[in-house]
Image 1 (cartoon, one colour):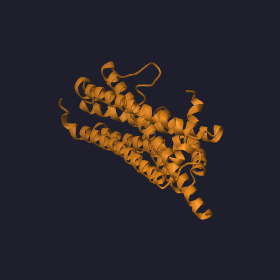
Image 2 (image 1 turned 90 degrees about the horizontal axis):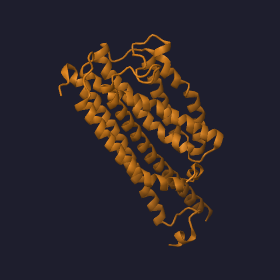
Image 3 (image 1 turned 120 degrees about the vertical axis):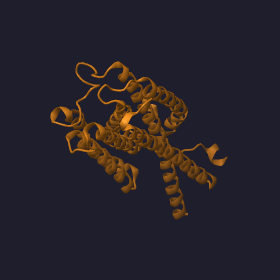
Image 4 (image 1 turned 120 degrees about the horizontal axis):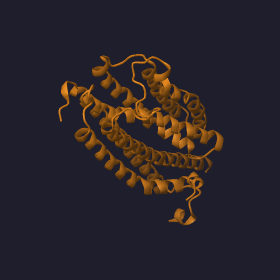
Length: 59
Length: 245
């Protein structure tokens, strides 16, 4: 697989794409953990949604 | 499950939790197949040589940059016309993903343009309109961050999104309406694709892989946004209870 004299341009394009895709993936995962932590923290302090069933509230 | 059921955020979260592992797995499989074909099966172009490999990431990025704004425009209608509770969640979370792909379209296009055209950038209609799209994404993300109340931000963003949608046909037809350095459409055009099958097939696989990646990331980001709004509501509820009691 020879990339010829323009190899640097091809590799740079793929590398930058990989970095951006990885960045998006990490952003989604880190954000998910942060929100789950915040919800768990509120739940531990007894702050729950009013629409939650009574059983869940008293549990 | 009817489509209307998804208006309930809890039902949507359950569906997202069930679908996301499958979507992520399918995306990985499609990328593996697409990258294998791109790097080990597809031939070099008879004029461009190996630089044609940049097309397999540039074209999907361009498509998804426009797809993101199209999605936001449909969601904007959902916010303004149908007042769907998840419409502004969908619009808000599509913006950073669409921006990332518009950015990739510009960068990979520049890296392709330098060896083929002899320049990284020209102010022609296609390149400029895509740059405008990228800047519009940044503006929309700023608007969402500036207005604290999500429903107020959602309505303002929806109006601006629909105004900005005028840029989509400009991007698509810029190569036909004006004399540009960018080549005319070679896949979606009257008379069928102008690309040889040996290059077109890997391109289709890569477009599918990137599209599925977009859908997966968007669904995951929507799930996060719903959770963020729950956190906000609970904190307001807690503050209200503290102030009242």
